[in-house]
Image (cartoon, rainbow, N blue to C red):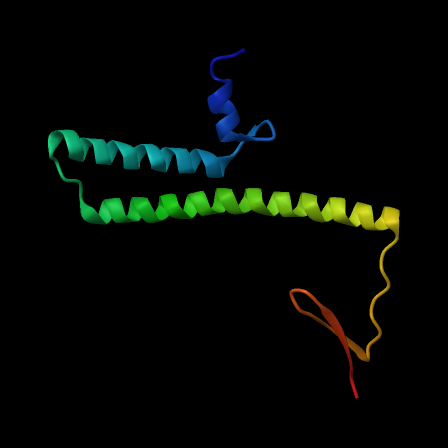
Amino acid sequence: MHQNSFFLGMLSEEGTPSSKRMVMFLLLAVFVICVFVNLFTGKKPDQVFLDQNFYLLTTAMGLVFGANVLNKIAEVKKVQSENNKAVGSPSPAPDNVVVDAQPNEVTKLVKP
């Protein structure tokens, strides 16, 4: 097995490099370096730089996580629609019926 496959897999998405992940990894490396420099040498980096780096890192992590969650949601919806087609999709409720779903019961209310 190739030694760099872990890092390439971490920074790529479906075989192609992901710019969001590259930026996130770079920001994370800068943030970790600043923290270790502060711990071991006592040199304090500029607070504005640390704040901006932290906000950018948080945003990049949110974008990467959000993209992965949206992909999973799309996969689940695709599987559900395929299952509904196989079983037969349920017919929609008529316009004059409101379905009120409670945790343990479903009641039908007829609109006047």
